[in-house]
Length: 205
Image 1 (cartoon, helix red, strand yellow):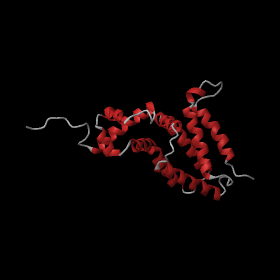
Image 2: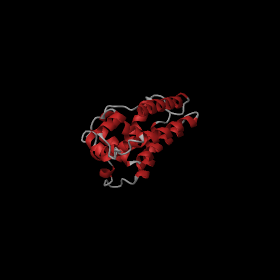
Image 3: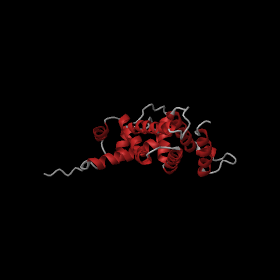
Image 4: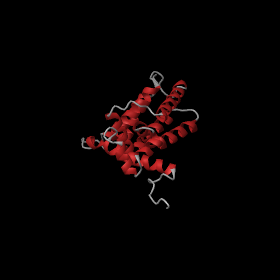
């Protein structure tokens, strides 16, 4: 007699299965954070078995890393392409990079929540895309410093950290500071922040 028992969802299509697991895990991690989510919850939400999750990702830790990488991938690709196109990085390139990161976070609240959970839970892992982008960004800033387009007495990685932390915090805490008198909207903040940030990066006389 032919076996009519249905197989777990997506098991005949590995890529579909992987995508279903990542989507289910993303939704759960965004809502509850890494620590509170179990592999059983992910399996139930994705309609797959726990063994299938382990087959594709190996562990909960690696699944968490895959979720973060997937969320960050679009920005990574766009920013790396921007850096390759620019040729000789200058102050305008730095301004455009800050603006791109700010708008990426604004358009992707899911990413902001993932970052917030990672920070709250003291996630010390640094993904390959994150590491590669910071390394490339520091190189581009250093090139601009060497050409005299940006002040050269600051650590390029600190330059990246300063705008990444500011933009991330703006969106992580927006529901709180939205009630501050005179705070303005996202674009008003970005405009003023760029004035302050770029003035600070102007070469010293």
